[in-house]
Amino acid sequence: MNKAIRPHRAGLAFGGVFSLFHLGWAALIAAGLAQPAIDFILWLHMIKPFLIVEPFDLARAVGLVIVTGLIGYVLGGVFALLWNRLHG
Image 1 (cartoon, helix red, strand yellow):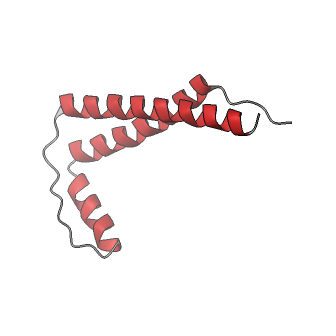
Image 2 (image 1 turned 90 degrees about the vertical axis):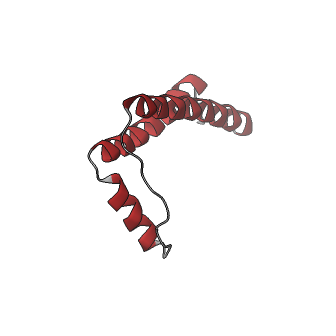
């Protein structure tokens, strides 16, 4: 009944989710909404806001999306390999 998880597909799924999340964050920065969002999130956690969001930089945003996508891909692949090993 247990089917193996393909590491490549899991990597693509994790990498895609990580990339989309950070693409959304970059969009918030570009729209000027990131600072109020982070201030609100910290306030909800009863933490005095202490982070300052810098102005949008396209090159850094692209780098953020690529790096987090690669990290997600590796984590997804490792997850699939561990899952298959434990449930084989």
